[in-house]
Image (tube, rainbow, N blue to C red; front, side, top):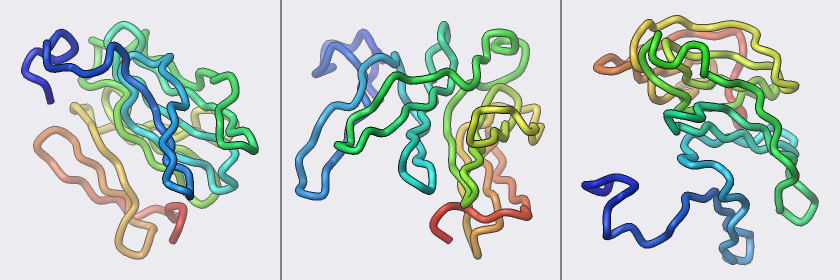
Amino acid sequence: GLEKNMDDPKKELSFQGVYRIAPDGKLSLLTKELERPNGIGLSPDEKTLYVANSHDSRNIIVAFPVNADGTLGKGQEIFNARDIIGKRPGSCDGLVVDKHGNVFATVPGGVAIFSPDGKQLGLLNTDDRTANVEFGEDGSTLFICANHNLLRIRTTTKGEGF
């Protein structure tokens, strides 16, 4: 939200990061390897952290193993938008995880669905700039923010935590 984005003189840090607040309230930096970390989600077993990177030159979704002490292991890219960025509206942005560990992530042109091992299962094609996605109501309704539209889709799964 800074006026000059990454070049704004009011920027307090020289990097973007993903942070963790431990149960005891301690704040720690988990990773600063992503230029613009955005959407974030945790697998149901809390062993994998998914992060979308909304940087124009590296528009990706990464899966990080979560170590027993809460730190992250080496991230594995599960999606790279390089072949569709600029051809379809949007970028890797928001994401949510269902109760089976499937990842619903906004990508250029819609919402991609990935299995827990990173295989793309499908695409909900909005053909619009799609920024956020979340499960709601009884957990089986997927809400999608696609540009000026709020979309609602009933699914056969439920979001994690429902």
